[in-house]
Length: 115
Length: 114
Image (tube, rainbow over all chains, first blue to last red; front, side, top):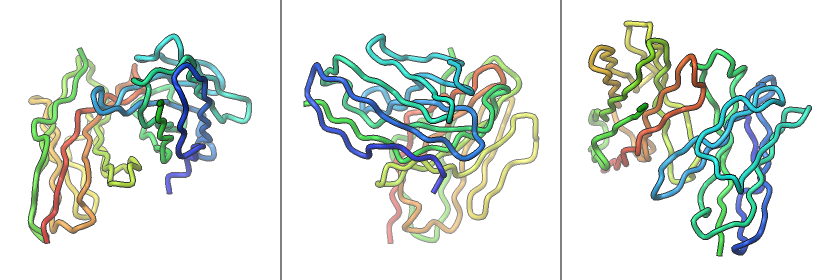
């Protein structure tokens, strides 16, 4: 158990819908990363938050957004869903994320299926 | 471009034998960490081992060790005394001082034969 929690574990929805994925980092970790794992794109970085502020953006679509709350949990919002958004979404946390080069601990992931 | 290449999509090893998974990476930065993550059928991403680029000594964690060749930008994983529970996808990754997110390879699927 990494100490990172994600809910829900599975999500099935229809095209055009909106969903919210939730992540709670390890106790004491300030930084949260979101990654998408799909068959064709592999593991891709979406976005990073550090202590409530957006720190870095990767290959995140405009239909996707995220935020980190004062209690440090984070939510990833996916809207206008398309079939191609079906993937495993991971959240990872690290202690600061400011100096990088840190070990990231991954949650169990949320498996999203868009029908 | 920052990339990680795992040239072996699939590997197979006999139980109790040793196997080496290859990884090469490309970054222009000198300060970075390298990682191997394991993803079993449960899909959980589990940290196997990490290596700090400024350390010349190769990291070791029980049956897992790395061969880090900084000049060649090579970071291979050796699994000794392979066990059935080692069967999984293995991902090589790194991050840098300036970029905290991980850059992943495509993965190597390891099968362990009894």
